[in-house]
Image (cartoon, rainbow, N blue to C red; front, side, top):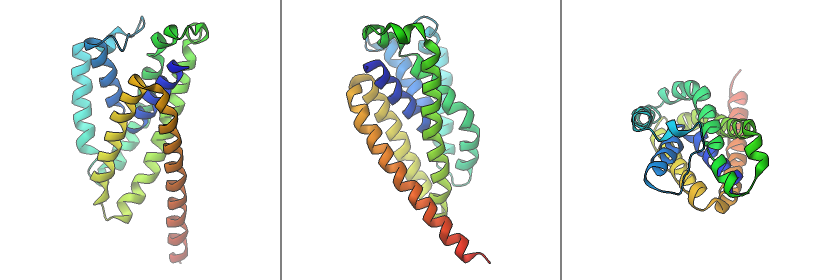
Amino acid sequence: MFAALTGLGLSTAAGLNAYIPLLVVGVLANFTDTVKLPDGYAWLSNWGVLAVIAVLLAAEFVLDKIPAVDSVNDLIQTAVRPASGGVVFSATTAAAELDNSTWMTENPWVGWVLGIVVALAVHALKTTARPVVNAGTAGVGAPVVSTVEDAGSLGMSLIAIFTPVLVILALILLALLAWWVIRKVRRVRRRADRRSP
């Protein structure tokens, strides 16, 4: 159970920012015993790989805070964030072994699929909400929302690794936020449809 919660939390974080959970997992695998990467994922703790991820994170950090550029970045990230979600979810199979879950160990593809689906769902919500935030705040809200997303990705990554039981609460809060954002987007679109001839 904890493995699944860790995987869900990390793939949710990847939907917000693809590089933060990858970096967190890789760094913790190097410096602590908290993260034990399974066979085939040792590359994630390689310092060269982590350096590349850090550079990509720096670029994402800047680009995601610029109105209009953030939407282009989100389009590019449509492939990257779900892939990252699949990697970090499936990299938690070591935790599945600690849970004595042979099913997850014998079916590693399930972790990939779940990670991709969860990260893609979070990414879709982010991509849908960002243009509404930009339009509603004349672009001023972009850096604020992006910073909150980055902090959320880091927080969710750490929660998923150190206290996975709290992932349930975080996912409930995210679902409520998604419901609120979807209602807000629909309201804005209805107003725009009424104004158009």
